[in-house]
Each structure stands twice: as structure tokens, then as C-alpha cells.
Amino acid sequence: MSTQEGEIPAMTIGDPTGRPVDPYAELPARPVDPVLFTAESTYAHTRRPVELAFTLLPDAYTSPEFYALERELVFANGWVAVGLADDVDRPGACLVVEVAGRSIIITRHRDGELRAFHNVCRHRATKLLDAQAREVGRRGRIRCPYHNWTYDTDGTCLGTPLFEGSDVPGGEEPVFDTSVAKGFDRADHGLLEVAVDTWGFFLFVTLAADPAPLRTQLGDLSQRFRGYRLDEWRPQRRRTYDVAANYKLIGENFMEYYHLPWVHPELNQVSRFSDHYRWQGPGMYTGMCTTPVSRNTEAGGWDGLGPLSSLTGHDADSGRFVWLFPSTALVVLPNHAFVLFCSPAGPNRTVETAVLLSHPEALESPDADESLDQLEKFWDLVNRQDLEIIERVQEGIENPAYRGGRMCFRFEEPLHRFQNMVIDRMVGIDRVPAGDDGDGDDDSDGDDDSAMTRMFPDPS
Image (tube, rainbow, N blue to C red; front, side):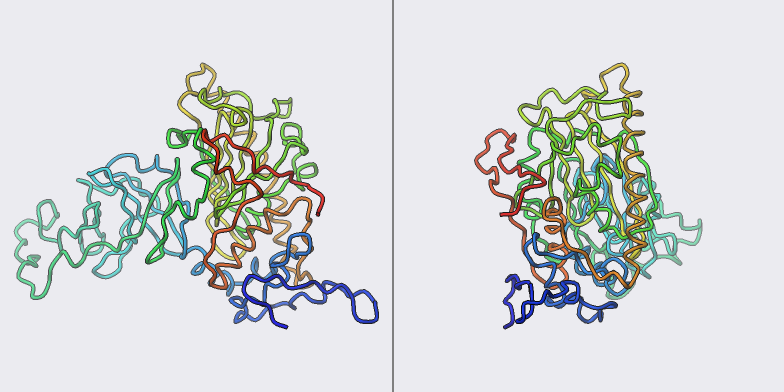
């Protein structure tokens, strides 16, 4: 009997004679025909409840064909966190990012509004700005390096190229005069716009033609982080890592603490295994918290900077860990935040940008710089430990003998949630997952932990 959309297929536990059946025999053989990457039946084993589920098929981490589809169906079809609002904090400032293989310019116009555009000249498709650009150019204008077509920061085409300050060689202005061109109106040739929005200190863009509001994808996160005043936090340190692994492996490692005692001996001393809880409501994210936050040890830790004075209740003594679908890690503690932007560069390569942020209150301490240096060193240690093991996973998952693994019900519900978000996009289902029991909707001060669930509950 076939299953309906959203229905979980039963798990075969034996044949009619009572002999046990190898559960791995039911998994798809490798390589999977790329035609099947958009078929619901391909993911039947991951669609089961977590206590019965197998991991997402290995080809999702290795196949160039899956990667190409994923760029369109996941990254070009929803909101993606691409940077920090602080990077475009004034008119003329810009940030050039890549989403689903498209180069995007994000800038701020003179009216204070954010704008985003495809990094493509409307004349002959020349790339307008390099990835390193931080200002749009002289007089706040975006100029094409090929034929000098020029645009304002609201996307308006200003000249093609005869206008004031266009650098046309002296005495040759008439040659470049396009005002007499037939059927040509500069208003028809503005930059191709991309939707842009912010939440807290994040910049988001979406390539979708008719996108749902960002708040729909974020779900209840704005409420959960209301007390942190995230829009006031500022970046203090940045590092970039080149990772020989699929971006999903970075996210899945971030979502679970099963590996903590063996991969992170230093972190394990300041982030006790028994203090981890799931912390997630409706939204395109996975969430966990540690409460209470442990004190530093000789191995390092999270103390040092002063905490945000306005935090109350659990917020004043908890660490919040959120994976923003599809590719961004967010850690918020009372005194600092840590972010990983994971930009896929291939099925087995990711460029990771790590940012350490703090609230301005934290910088009032006389030893703030020393504390920030200590935090950066600690996070770099933890992140390098993660990346070493993630790259080993990528090496293993490339082996065609591996066809998938059984989910660990005690620790891997966030992975199961994330992998099913990916599957939804791949098969064309548009939905936002519900949260754990208790969604905190009745909370009035933003400090609600009613949705906390032990990371390692026994299955019911």
C-alpha cells in the first residue's frame, strides 16, 4: 500500500517466518539515480519517527547532481542568513555575498533603507562589484567596469554613460550621448532586485520571486530572543575556515552533543552533558540550550565579558544554540554571541565565516579586549575540533559501502528535524515544522523555557 504525503511508512521488523530482516537492506543502493532526488519515496527511511529513522541518504552529501538541485530548491527558495546588518550600517556601504551560485549586492540607500540586487549589469551582464567590495563607489554609485553604465543604490539606472561625473573623455561627450536612442528609457534598465530583510544582527536575502515574510521562516525566534536586544550587538572578531565537507555535516554536528565527551574535552568541562536541552518551537530552525552556563576552567570557557544587564530568569544564565535553516549557526550567551555562516562551495566543500559578537555593555570592562581574545581562542579551538571530525565524516560518507545510519533517539532529534526540512524542499513541500511540547506562546517577557526537552529522553 502506498503512503500519502506526510504519512510515515512502517518499519519492517521481520519476514512472515519470524526471521529478522537486515534493516540496512531496505536502504537505497548507491549511487541513487538523480531523477529520484525529488521523489518522496527516496526518503522513506528518514521520514520515520526519529526512534525508527535512518539518516538522510549519503548521496545528499556527495553527489554533484544533488548539490545542483539543492542550490535551487533549498538555497534559491527561502530566506538565507548571509551577513551582518553592521556591515551595511550607513549609506553607500555594501556587502557582496553568494547565494545559490548567484552574486548579490546588499547596500543601504540614502533614505536609510536596505536594498539588494543581483550583481549583474543590465547591459551586458558584467559583474559589477568584487566580493571584497565594502563601498559601492564614488558618490554612492555602482559603476560597471565594462561600459561605465552606472546605478544608484536604489537600483535606478543613472546613466549609459553620459551624465555628470561619468568620466567620459573630455571633448568626446557627443559620442557617448544616448539621449537620442529610440525606444530606450533608463527607467526600464534598473538593477535586478532581491528581497532583503534583517532580524537582530543578521542580514537575510531570498531569491524567491514571491517570498513569504522572513518572520514566517523564523517562527517564534523573535519572541524567544526578545530579551537579548540582538539588534544592538556588534561584531568584534572574525575568522574564515575552508572546510572539506558538505555544509549539512557542519550543521548536524552543531545540532547534537552526542559527540561532546570525545571530540571536545575542553568544552565538555564548561558545557556539562546533563545540562543540555532541546529548545525549539515552530520555525525553520533547530534549537538547544545549556542551563545553567558553567564557569570557566583552566581549559577555557565562556566567562570574562560582563553579561547584558537587562537579561532576567533563564536568559541570564543559559546558552542558546540555534541552527537557522539552511546554513547558519547562532550561539547566544549572556555576555557574547558566536555565529557561523556556512556557504556551500560544492558537495564536499564549505567556506565557513566565524564571527564573535558582543553587546556594547560588555566593552565597558577595562579588560574587554583580553576577554574577547580569550573567547576567540576558545571558540577557534572548539571549531577546529569540530571541523577535523566533520572532514573525517565526509571521507567516510564518500565510501559507497555506506548507505546510511540509524538515528540515535536519545540525541539526534534536531538532526532528524533538520534533515526533514531539507527533504521537504527537495520534494516540493512548503511547511514550517512545529515545535516541541509547549511553544511558549503565553510568555509575556520573552524568558520562557516551557519548551525545553531533555536532549536524551527515553523513547515513549
